[in-house]
Length: 308
Length: 294
Image (tube, rainbow over all chains, first blue to last red; front, side, top):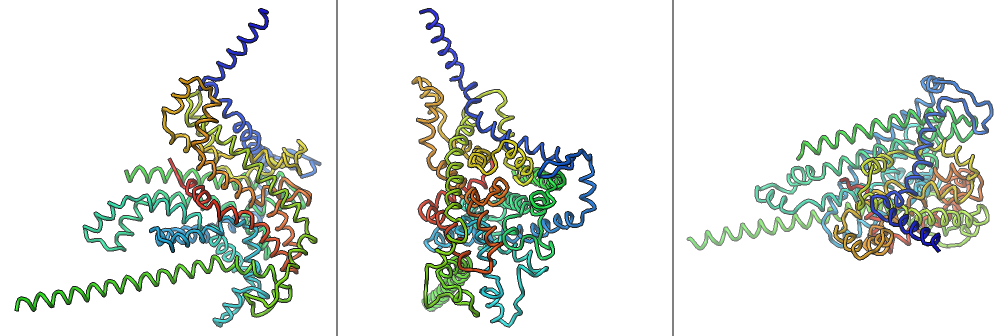
């Protein structure tokens, strides 16, 4: 009898202990934190660890090589080129997407039927995968069946082989990415523009500011934080470009569109399956992205403080 | 004399007004023309894809290209099932993206709830951990993740695909913002009524969070449905591929036939498109939330 009693009270006190918010919180968070630790933090440390090894996908002949992989990177022209291609893509894509998205948001900020319809349409490519977009654009730009070469031809222009042309392939991929993603920027900027208090415009109007002046002196300063956010996320996202390249050009022609992630992927997951070296390249890419994220975060918070 | 001056000013005024009015109309027309052009640029590729997927191969390969064709056929849709295991891809994608969405809704809201409404040791540290996690790209740690999964024999399994994605830092962040916004006295009153913490969360807090849960649901669903690199790395056999991974590989092999590829592309995006039509505001909300900063 007594035994049962103590077990019940033990159970109760156990329950009482974990029902206090300061203890229950850990139970609430445990699954997420464990998953993040196991499938993100540990692999992340693993990337750094692997980059000091010669290790292949079959785990044969694994050897500690110190900094050799990093030294190899600086002598590997294809690896360095892949970094430059990534930067090139980023410089093409980010400004274009931010400008197109912001202008669309500003133009469609008033809620009319036409504007709402336009916004819904501009968001459709966002839900379409980069794979599907890649397939669509490969065909639109295909010299045999595509519309874009045909239309250009009608205007008397020559019809290049967009994805197979060394100079045009990357810009084509960038344009396609803007087409697919500007709806995201538009949505974020729309939220920012609609959050501007109408009284700011009223007082600007009373001061005799015309629409153009209002845009540059009221709208722009008010949306700077969101604009900065879009630039930042876009920069970081573009540095990870992979899907659209994998589907359309697979890095070609002659590796001219090979991005850093594409290079890491093909080095690690196709012959010669060098996981160690691929990890070293991934580490370098991570350092670049981390510097970008941290510095842009610092810059943004500095700007925001200045504006207050 | 006086009357005449008044008349002329009125006349000048009215011409000014009609000028102003005319300018406004012209501007609005120009605006609509430009926007319609942009709509065309966005819609045309989809429309052309959809129509062409019902054309015979010889009608697709015509120069100059045509929007419409005299004859339509289901042949491409039949052919694509024969050439690639599309049904398997659809099944894998539904299981992977669907299960991931459901589990992450539960886990993300639990963690977000704890971070928003409970006081405990190390709260700030956990919060920063989540915020930093949001900035770590998958590409950087995919190789060790692959090795980890390989060692645990989880490659080519649904468990292996679902578990690493069963929570996302962004989802936690989103749910936390949602719970921070709910009135403070709600849980205190419930606690006085003797409800335990789990009940407060499930019976009071979650029902009030339906809009955010919906937004997060479509957000994670879209991300996982469309993801290419992640399933490409964690699956090695054709029978475990998801739609984007399967289609990407198919495109590489069979680009000589356009029709079936187009049919496959249509099938892969149709489910999300249908959901988008009915739940548009939640899609947009997810994107808007991603732009929110504290």
